[in-house]
Length: 67
Image (cartoon, rainbow, N blue to C red):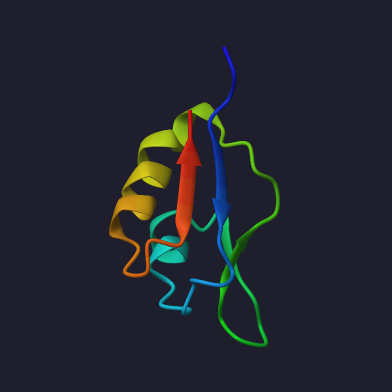
């Protein structure tokens, strides 16, 4: 089974930070512009539901989750 993967589209992210509030272990914020990024695309099993919620709640729909 392939692990869940997540990425943030920097062209769409506006730096609302909701994803970081939901899953700070996965979504980091850049100091210079507040835009979100992920350090690694694979999502640990225990964080998958939270990452899905973060993706669904992103105002800009900048988060892509693949199973």
